Length: 409
Length: 85
Image 1 (cartoon, each protein chain N blue to C red):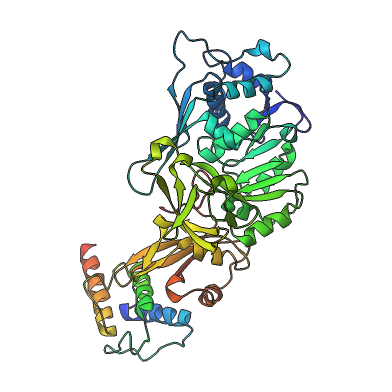
Image 2 (cartoon, chains in turn red, yellow; image 1 turned 45 degrees about the vertical axis):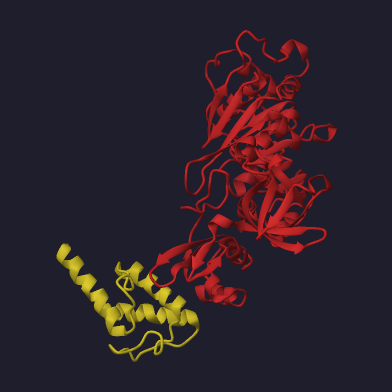
């Protein structure tokens, strides 16, 4: 166990005050024996221990809705590919990293609940998931704030990055505002990866967290204004916007809201009828059907050669208002540019006249402004059918476990 | 508050959001489109507000053109819920 928060070596997990932080040496004790040790950890730490234990023993994993199941075990009679503590007497963290490298053929399945139909599964090999992992001196001593469930692909990637570098993980799941800053400051978090909604709810801040070196925004549309605000709030951090999906992991990275295609993906990405398609080789094997995969994400092309585009939202979330197709995320991004609005969710409300009518839930940083002002602001920027007609001020939006605005509530 | 009074309040709320003044000459023959100046989105907002406040979708049983028809449908709904209660 670690006593003092700052400067301790070998931190692997800090829960944010509810339980003592633990080191990699402790993790090793928890995962080495075949049966769970007495006094097993609870909550997020228990999930992380289950993940690490399965991965270092070369087992397959099935993750969904926060639940981890061991999908398959190493063949019996075959020696487990885990190197054993005696190989790395000096560093438990190095031993775990080496085990992850050795078990690259393990398979990890992530489950996404679609808005309709049965849940969809995407299976990746550990090798493929490690493509996005960056190791080296530069990452030694990193401490990650974990804002995604580790059973989602985004959270899993954060954990994998941390474990491959022997980095600490600090629990930020479901935490907002001041408490995020307190935990990050206390444990020296220098890497944050979370949804645009998470960062919107964090800003503005009083303490700029001088140690923060990178902020990664993903999972939802991040607009230029938000990326700029994050940069201003954390001047010492590099700010990235990533395009990622459960079926393919992280595909594209950008400094702004526009994405371009790196050389190695030139023939792997295409846009057809305003939607983004990926070549099947980028996609989990169990999600492949034909040569190209329809991501269902709507994009606006800003440049043909070289190709540059902005992600606008999910095709499946488009709302039909009197025959006009409205993308709620476009309306939300304009609402979020109104001074004082820190959260917005636009949904369709059924009616007998236009089929759907837009309604908006709005989170205000301080005192709400009159509805007329917000409507006038939207009317000057959007055609009438895209302006919400019903407004509701709420204290917080309903978010998914990953911290995205929930769309099918 | 009578159905007529409740509906006047809601209709004027829709007009206020449109940036036009309060309407005070409601008679049964007042036309929603021509006299109140409601387009289809205004009518949709009006019907959603009525449903929120009065619990009835006045357009569900077919198109409604005049003030009198809207009031009649809400009153009919009020009577049926009063009987059911």
